[in-house]
Length: 315
Image (cartoon, rainbow, N blue to C red):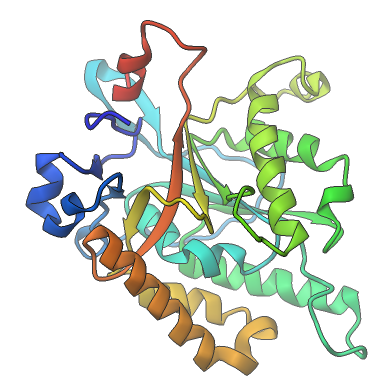
């Protein structure tokens, strides 16, 4: 990617090798070939109230934040994370989510399943476990600073069998109108969890469907609008090229994950230690103390065109 590329509406430059701004703020980051950094400085960002509003595909996203760019063009700061289970977002990129919320983004979360098969106790019913894990997600969402959560209620462990997943996600995209999509990297080698693979592919497939009106046209007759996602961040990836500094948000990430007591309470110490080590490894790769790693994909407004460079600049 060109060194001058900026995310439309991100409010900050993407850092990568050869960028003098990167060298000035994060000296070590400029020494890592092919690496970018979402140079969010969480400790210096204004605090945004973490008010949590649960919404569904029919909910409201009125009052979303936007940031002005050159020429008065208003570009959104809306992100949608698409995950397979409760706790996925907190575990894999909770620090980045908090950093985005503090940077003025409206961050929404779609959770495909309730994780209601993820227990070792036969005495626990799936219904009670689902209710508990939804409530844990709501509490964690307050710490993350989420603007809304969509529970899709799909079958835990069987997302790859669900033909309605893409259409349901398309409806969510058209309602939330995200500029940034955050989800699993479905091409990660040796990914053993079928839901992690399935949700990554479904999320990316729904991105295409959401922008074209002949996909699920009945949704548009219901008053929704087509949606074009401009940027994709894939977490749990083998080939990271983009990093978010979570030095100032790591502790809050752990606090959010700790709300998922039904999943982590019995192994919390080992989990927290492992996450800290992983954040420090990503930090060393990017010139931060702690970081989270992503594969970043920039999506042009249309097919290859003479306006490509202009689109990359935001307006």
